[in-house]
Length: 165
Image 1 (tube, rainbow, N blue to C red):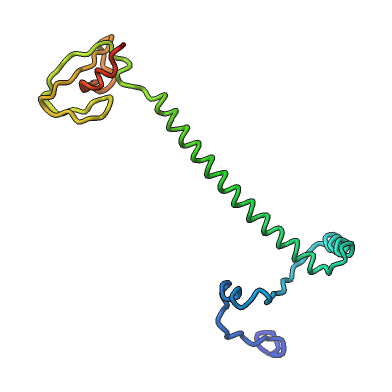
Image 2 (cartoon, rainbow, N blue to C red; image 1 turned 90 degrees about the horizontal axis):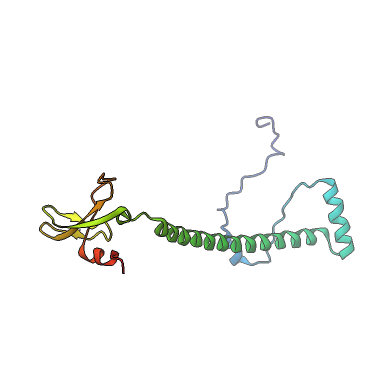
């Protein structure tokens, strides 16, 4: 007796190394495994009736159903994954397009520009270009004279691009 189990009930340990799936495939597709599963009585009756109608063994019917289900799930998963990736790319593109469209330009609230010579380095509020000390630039003036954030300084190129036609 070994912990409540007689020696006749114990199985010898399998000391062989585990077989990897790739090795199984190389060994040949003919090696089939037995899979035991529990099913409700109603499902068993339906499977037997269906197998009888097709004149095939129940095991063949179940194997075929499982193979088809795995193939359909794989195909559906692959197709769904591709559609989701495409939808995500489309959303990203549209989001960026809308962000650019809605982006608030600092120049939009400016009613005039004053020519200035920079005493310190600055960055163009429109294009982001670095403007060094001594560079000619243009200071944006807001209508009510109350600044609504950092000063709006633009380079000559951006000033020319923002001039009304």
